[in-house]
Image (cartoon, rainbow, N blue to C red; front, top):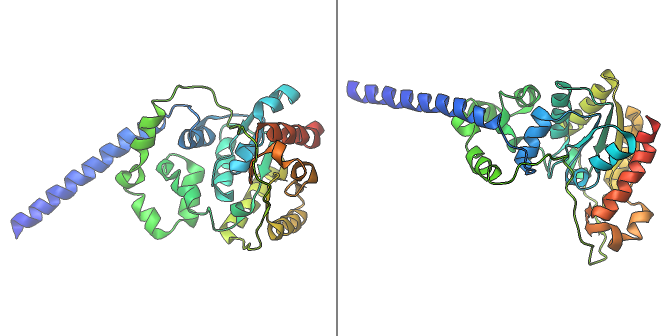
Length: 297
């Protein structure tokens, strides 16, 4: 029996040492993530590196819509598009708070879609960046405040926190390094004319609270905030009604292009798919945004 106990202690000690070693090596690797334009590397840039005058937040619709280079060429202000596929208001809040640790943007452009304030992306918004737990203060605070006790318990283990890091890190190191501004153009035109109507919509309290925190943070730091609903052929009328009411109550400027006739009537020209503009559509929408919002600076 004594021998069994000693063996268990030795095994636990080895596991603990492996976990500590994994944390030391993994953290060093993470903080040297190359800039190559993949989801994980862009998340690293948004959370730890990029400084800008104009910060763009949102999901893939933001990522494929607002062009930082055009903003810089038109206004002289630096810009970064921190939009990322399938991530909600919780991720946007964490990026904004992280950016403020490095610099203070003059303007935040927040592109909102229905999924960002529902439960759809609540968990994967954090799962994709959980390896930065303990390294990024806003993320760590969010998980400590809103994460389940199971998640918080597992994140004490570096082996769990870093369990998928090597795969995407290895891939990132095979791609040429280049300076990314976050915008990812889509080329090609929509081939069908379908307009999809969604009627189901129910907000998530955590996502809404994160939305409110974004607004509060911008006000406290004297940052101009403009909320956009980018053009889409996936019509979510209940969401648009909710957003208009919410932004009015919060006294926030909302620019709703979700059902805009200019884009709807020319959807074969401006859309890549039912929910994303192509590069021509993005160019037009960025021009509109610059004139409406940044032209006021």
